[in-house]
Length: 229
Ligand code: DX5
Ligand code: ZN
Picture 1 (tube, protein in one colour):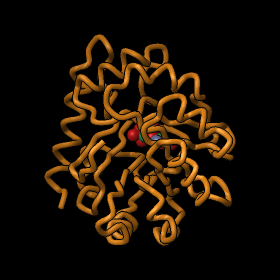
Picture 2: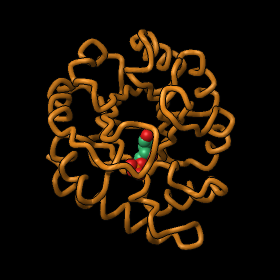
Picture 3: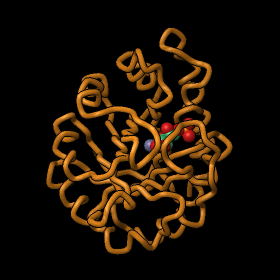
């Protein structure tokens, strides 16, 4: 994975057909996805349940790009090795998931993955001040995590603050929640480079009719790229 700030689209398979993950992953990659975003929820940190390590491991052979695993679980540390074994390229933990996020980020890198740090809408940019050299990606949540299809919450000021704090460090800014061709330019202009999108990518398409996935990905990418600094 070479670092670049060009716009990357990461469809969330939370909006895919749950009976067909292998084909859905192949379809979004063929239609231009840069990364594949996997939302892991535990029914405790967030009020919803999704995939455990065996499911994520089963997705792995289908992902030819980057498997970006977003943990919405607490605690985190006991599961890091299992997600490394499942083949995550990037493992993102929430800053709010426990008292020892510094240790968690060290452990994620120690297990051979890129370390992501997610911030809920209520968490300020300044909370990452002492974590910037331990992280490869900051995920700015633009919804309260737990469900796809929620309304975008404007976090533009937080994104700008993070972009300035990051400086020259090779740290991605990822946006997660409510990304559409309408909201993508706002976050790209503020300095985001990875855009997660679930409902806005999968709407209108299917594994037997995947062309709408491609059109949806292009619409988000074009809107974001035109606004990017
Ligand atoms: C929210 C998840 C997101 C979500 C995005 O808890 O982390 O990745 O699936 O879905 P949309 O794009 O539909 O808001
Ligand atoms: Zn996510």
